[in-house]
Length: 397
Image 1 (tube, rainbow, N blue to C red):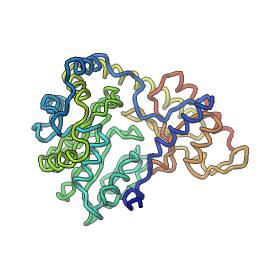
Image 2 (image 1 turned 60 degrees about the vertical axis):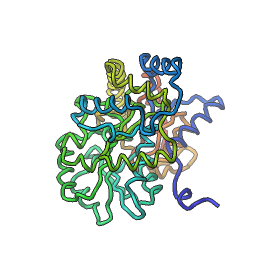
Image 3 (image 1 turned 30 degrees about the horizontal axis):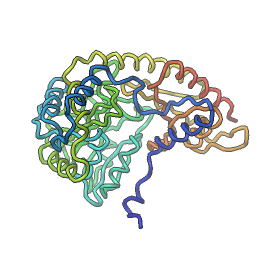
Image 4 (image 1 turned 180 degrees about the vertical axis):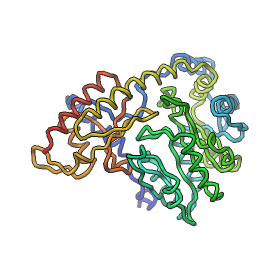
């Protein structure tokens, strides 16, 4: 009864952990959740007020399928202002979150048996989206020593005659790693030898970058613009996860194909959310910078605290709100009950059940030696979470 395509897709493991943590909390357990992929801040007030005005003024109807002209113009101006990229409004498609923008881009680009190169650790949905489009995800395992970033040689080795696309995510979910301009330029040198490969650049964490400016691959090499899809949105930098608003900027042919798909699936996102997004991009970014600064303070604490735990190593991420420590020293150890923790999933279930700490296993992201901890949480919860992590690890035999 169920299609093979639906059967081939796995549910999100990040949502699975979060669901189990919530279930235990409902039972009365004390749970510290460092698994969330969303900011713990409220949407800035001026953005909320724009949504309220839209409601009060009767802006309730369907908008153009690709988004309101005003929002697409605001996105065009933002891309010029922040990224030095020139687009026309017809190259912008606004969707119900960056996740939909990614999925529709994959459906518009990938045919059966096309290969999509995905560096690991990867966001959990990338391989599933490639499968949904009928393609084959080709995961490339990167190294802790290189801060989990794809090298030019790894990219070269992964390319075949069937390669259709490369997905890059910087800042990265789940690692927080950011590519430098030089690193992206080196990847671009490889890609310049393969003009048929499309680049999907996921830049949803653009506004949460520390110690440096955000750089996307088009800032490193503008010659790739005619085959690059830039994915972005409002959920992370503006704490607008529930508003469900994202977009893509792409060559007109790709944008047109995505628009056609979207017209038959959901049409445009909420009119009210679009008015809020327009205000987000046309107002000062003071609130965004405040949230970024708070995330940086938390990053500084959690990285130092993790590296103080015997047997744990964690590099300093430059963006997003995640750390991805190497926990390989604690794999294949036993609990007091005699259960062997063979992988990061076993370890995370043990930490959740025995210590009340929710983290996401690296297995979900294609890297078995890591776990993802989110510091989109209060400093009090971070400190308690680290204490529970240390206690749980030290209890292993």
